[in-house]
Image (cartoon, rainbow, N blue to C red; front, side, top):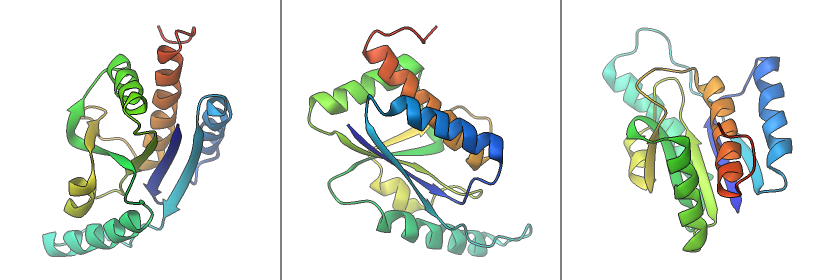
Length: 159
């Protein structure tokens, strides 16, 4: 399986980068995985709804520019499907079974994803109604992808 993670912004905290790198190392036997970052747009605190839309649109354009047409896209969005780790594992296994082995996971910026990215997604995935920093979300996603592969192979880890 070939997995691409497209994420807005850079991870600045060393502990988060260390965790991401650990899961990248653990995932090597299961999949080819790469992380592509797009720069986040400057977004002062008091943006109007029109300005928010412009920021999301510019970030969305950069995200979409990195996604090839043949890829299956899973976008992380609060309004997406809230599924269990086992269900994520099943989804990844099903994609592989039907030949959709080129996946792109998308993590938006602090304002979320533009509607064009949402529309491009084959699946909207939610990690719950809680709000997480998008940098931390990258680490959580990597762990869940790793967990999914372990579940699918019947290997110990998932409890």
